[in-house]
Image 1 (cartoon, rainbow, N blue to C red):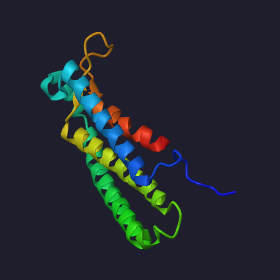
Image 2 (image 1 turned 180 degrees about the vertical axis):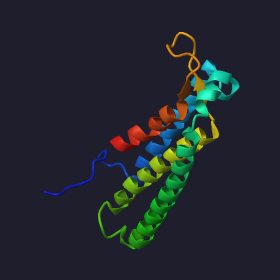
Image 3 (image 1 turned 90 degrees about the vertical axis):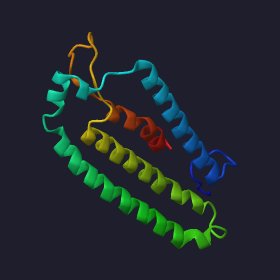
Image 4 (image 1 turned 45 degrees about the vertical axis):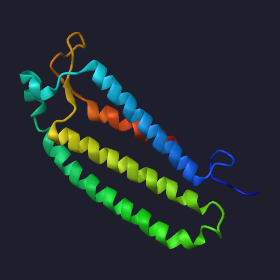
Length: 157
């Protein structure tokens, strides 16, 4: 009995990558439309929220930015090495191109974590909780929520 990777019958690796890229593009467009419609207030423009946000989270995110940069570079280099080592076997070994999808998805996840921590370190996309939400003037760390939009579907693949 032959084992094959989980994929739609007849779909090539490049078609799957196009589907992933389409999902990421559609997700980015949807998030941009929601943010444009909601127009949330930035945390830095609210004195109480800025005081809470300045309580030290930037130090954690600075170290996370360094760690995610190193991790993403190492994973990207590993993926490139894997590609260059196996590209001569593409015609010989069936479905070998599917071995590149998990490392590429891990690169995407690490880059998303890098972007999230960079935005938190810089204070970008940190918003104020609206009145009536419960704890008004508390920071809402939107990058953490945004990071899961492309990562969860990628992990499900």
